[in-house]
Image (cartoon, rainbow, N blue to C red; front, top):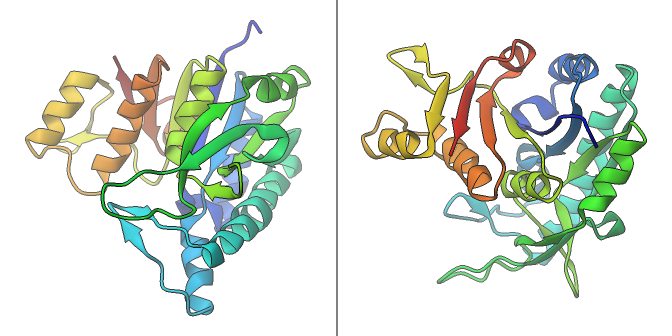
Length: 249
């Protein structure tokens, strides 16, 4: 297509904050490359589960989605969160279209496998129809993807991070950018601008990368494993200034 393509995964930290969403939308409007945006919405799903007295269940940090919760996931991710994000993008002048992995069979999913737990309606990516995204990008449209995806007998709830990597690989994206509430990996309070896959794993092993940063870094490394040349962890200010931690093979 001749233009750089970046896949943006926006953290749930931004999704229920109108001021942050406005800033995000303005940043998207100012970018020159073609963008595909993927979002989650776990905070709002948990909030709704609690209001309905449904106990959220997690295994290894992943939500186990039962049949009752799947309906809530579809309602929150494909409905309120996706349309809120699209509205902010439209208001910033971005020609955005919301869709889920179900629409046009963008993402086919299977049940996620676990050694000891039935993951029920929590899924993993089986295949991606990259042409769905190419067609939108060729029209100048920015796709905004909710990670609910199509199985054979039901839909599945997928984690947004691996969905971002799978979509990026399918369209040959130049990078995946994880926009969260942290500027990147810090060492001695200084931002580390670039890490190889080997260096990142060493920093996890020796405890330099710890806590909530570990899953972020592992998601970035998974992106590299899917064939995307680079992954970036940054926050909104960092993205606007092209600053963050870049991971390369």
